[in-house]
Image (cartoon, rainbow over all chains, first blue to last red; front, side):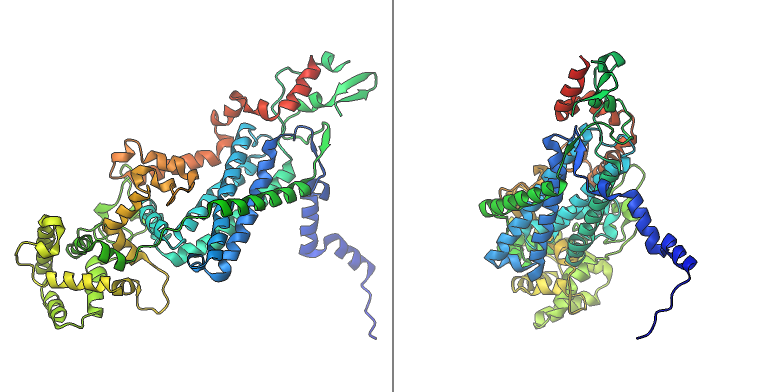
Length: 224
Length: 330
């Protein structure tokens, strides 16, 4: 048995203090997201409305869309045209996306009317807004890669809009291979990353408080 | 907890916290909120909803259209389209970037033509790509070999003249039927058209347009462009209410919700000046880009960011909270 040479005490202390890059990331993560703040079991008293459900419902629908899309991916993009089971899985993918977009739109309008960007929460709004746009792109490329009449028509029509502003030069909606990769890799990855950042920002800054009350509190009023 | 004793005073904590700036951590009372439970319940409910909706309503799958089906179902439209590919008047042949080098064809936003900025990245030569090259690959008959030889031996002006005269005569023929075209000097064009129709009806053109010198292929640009140059695909799409003036961009084949979230984008195409403009796509896209920017930057735009304060839907959302806070003040 070989003895492990002991580190000098000061070297050990220095290592514990710095911990290298790993230590820096750990300290930074704990400072930004203390466990109680990252996963709290209490929320401010005003977080009591059905509208709050639609944020988490959107994430749930996104996960269901990813799972149903992954099942479709198991047998490839043409499977669902010739298989009853495949067609049903495609239907679950369609409806999970419809629910995802519906929940996200309700969540979006709710947050708009709460002015949820108040109190240094602008980036939370921006990441949500950009993930909505990325989701539209993801759904759109899904329509392009269905391999049916809708795909043929949507792609040949959409090319004109994209070409008219120069995007079509490098984002060719008539190239099935390119669109499939965007649909199943790049755009879901972008939406996933944006959603994670969005949720972390919500945890970091907390749920936006209500606008101040119409009847301003006075010192007299708080004295019973 | 609504009231807290502070020395000799009872303090309504909701109201005290309510006056703090939104950026400060909430100092008022809290309530139990199980995020993990909420997420799991949401996941289960959404999964059940998805499974039930899929079982009840299925999903649309209108079969794809092949060039062979088009050539069989609407041979006159197919030949008329091929004739425009040959004389350079089809949509693809006269498109501009990113398919052809005609800069004047680009849509414009005022003086700007962003369509031209990135140049021709998917070059299309409608004569060679859609007619001559596919025929060369299938030139087993002596008639076709002779026609292609005559075509290749003529100069560009002669080729254009044959193609244009044929295209014009075909447009004037009853039902644009190639068999009823008036007599004229069309050179090898009638034979080429007849053979291209036969090639398409046999299914050979589907493969010929997809083949681009490689074994594996996933790029359907050429067959889709050719298909879209005809009117048959549009007829099928309009029957499914997918036309541009039928709010088609947000519709789906059959009776399904489709991409309802594209309602605003689709809306602009229904109204003037966009509905009658030759630059509609460029104008609508630039307008939507601007609106998207406004949407993303709402927190920084005076006026827009104040709308939620002016339309008090937030009082409905937080009605319990306001009832407690403002009730405590009275």
